[in-house]
Image 1: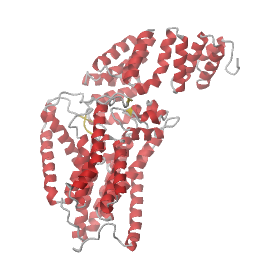
Image 2 (image 1 turned 90 degrees about the vertical axis):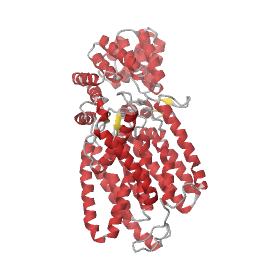
Image 3 (image 1 turned 135 degrees about the vertical axis):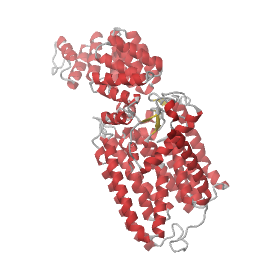
Length: 631
């Protein structure tokens, strides 16, 4: 990438950035305002169908629905919480800010959409600066960023708040650093560092920002090996290394030397398929890259989940060899562009820098790629396309109208696909049914839909899905847990225990399975076994401790330890867990302790929450009282 000064449309040197006259600035202000307003309007239109969506049973329970720290907005613990194998406190705090009673997905999704609108504006502004204050190419980059259907997953999925939030800070940091390069004012450098740290605390993939700084250096004609420039980046690199170490610890299920609180089970370190060969470790990331570029132009067959090949033989299909060749060609093109084309070098550099951490070189989870991974990387590719269109119009002004009309038609078609893709995230059933249509051999999709159907009371349908999932992959522990829950609902507690045991043999670190098995033990009267499982569940998932007070109270009640039972039920009530049953059971414990007045108050509280609570009503009548009379 050379640092030659760009020239105007007739060969004259372009004016230095920031030196335009006041009249020129005022003339540019209205088109910019109109462009930003138009971008906001088209973005809101594209995502107008998202506000009536439900939470989906894919990370949303872990991040929001069943996360007591989020539901009770506990800022302190959220600053330390590792959730779903990720340490991203800014994301968790932002989710907690949307929590309400009763809980609704609408504020979470509305915030995601607003962040996407903000990101669209930031993409416009960054592109505007990079294109030396030319509004047309900046508008094109931002427009296609706003409406591309590959970005739906990042916006329409509550749990992907981390994507839209980290991108906001990342883009703002890039703008601040660009301003620093223009003005040499160190305040801008400090702002870039602060925004970069916030981006890392929203999603760890922001650690590649120092590479983007080098791209911006080269774009502005600065020597990337300049000693002063490298020293300026030292704090950024140090922060990236620290965040990377934290991410490695969190993904492995650790707590980074006791500094953090594990909030849920960690992500699977390796995909649940087969050991990867060296060829596959290259082929799968290469295939993801090929698909991201292909879907940029042809966003068809989009899905929430793209599984790895089901067998080793399938991973040696021709498409994976083609993908490796395409990756090599892309890298060669980038290397060539470093000396020949600033636009290609910057665009491809941005794309690779922001995509590299999620290209599955070290597989995490069971998906070979994901639409959400394209959210920020596509900015680089849109940049190349916008620059090419602008150059074509500059050289052939007579093509401006047909070219812009074609781009408008393309944008309209993308909006149609985006609106349709937004609908795929309507609820859990729609989401996983769409994945099953796309990947009929995906055990994860059947397991997830079965889990949702079971929670919806459709136990037989759930068991049908879970049986298929078990047949497709007999080593998925969560399937056995969900089958155990289904048998428990049907009253077959013995079978439920067998399935919980099988789940824990496959993965002995599933904290929720221990708590579910504890409930089965309680139904069988095995209170001591239940207490042991509850202790293990709290050890594995400390942030779920609040939800364990109620079953622990039931165990102590079975053992006749009324004082300890009353204390546990009180803790459950304070944490908002257990509902009317927590009050009723504490009332029983207080009756055992001879506290008739306290028991009566608890029974009345239970009836206020559930007027038809049979145990509370019977106990209150046994005390010779009614719901309205006071002792």
